[in-house]
Image (cartoon, rainbow over all chains, first blue to last red; front, side, top):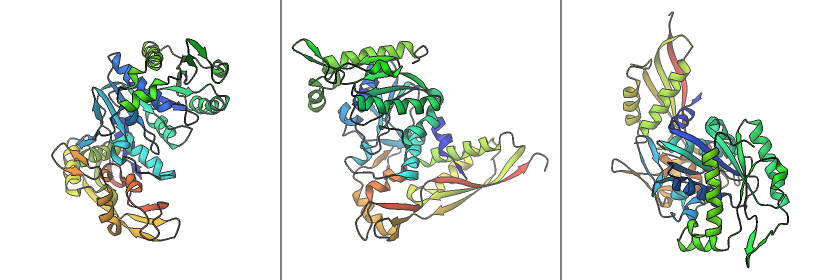
Length: 258
Length: 149
């Protein structure tokens, strides 16, 4: 029995130069916001960028990008991602809206493989993959199919709980031979009356032994920027930190090694 | 028209399998096709024939075995087929995928696993069920002629 989808998935990314896996150990660390924002920032640098939201249980990239109403189309090459002003985006949200998708085990693995196989990305400099938290089916299949083009960015908060789970993820990625580009410490601090407040205490990111790509502040204007439709670029503190990280990734892809 | 990308995947897969195995040509390819994919088999066949031209598959016979979709509720034990829930699935799918050639497809056409978003156990209403058949497309058997045959 041969599954033809592996051949389709390899064809799907044949013209993709770099696959940026955005991963986290735990949920709730802001990984989807970081992934979607990095995709936008890389596009702003003039790169051809796709964003693949692989969180099958809680797809949220369309919410971050304010594109919940967009719909997918298909043709001879498979499914075409949504084009948002030059950013190509796929998310299950475009299909299922707010319906739950309680897939698990082998069917979940099959769904992820189908998504990887069906999308016609075309030529891209970067495919940014918003992985669900943890070390489950989604990340294992992505590594199996896209691993040779992949570099991973780990997202965490300064919380000791989040950092401890990142260690497991890091071990997995290293065992599977995935290049680690570095760590993003999200919700790292808050600027209050001009002073930096470290809500979780002193940052421990350096203790992981991985290059810290950047520390992203908790920006109270971010949620409002998303909800109002103004977009993440208008949350100034947040956005400037993301731009800096995107620039580091783009300039140093070959040299970035943790 | 998703059938074309499926056919291309099948042809690429079979050709990759034949590499380095001393195979002169492929005579027959048996493909299992899950009912949930809602594929038009005539288009799949046409695409397979066209994409096989000039390869080891040229002239091969393509045999399709349609695997019916079956479900089993983990909560109450009920079993059912796609026909029993087809109407509710078609009503429940809010979003359809527009085709570049003017048609519209159910999302299941591309991602059959999404059946989990669109149906429940017809007896107890639970979403905790298993798909026991009818998912996906797979090459299940090849008949080949070896170089030295």
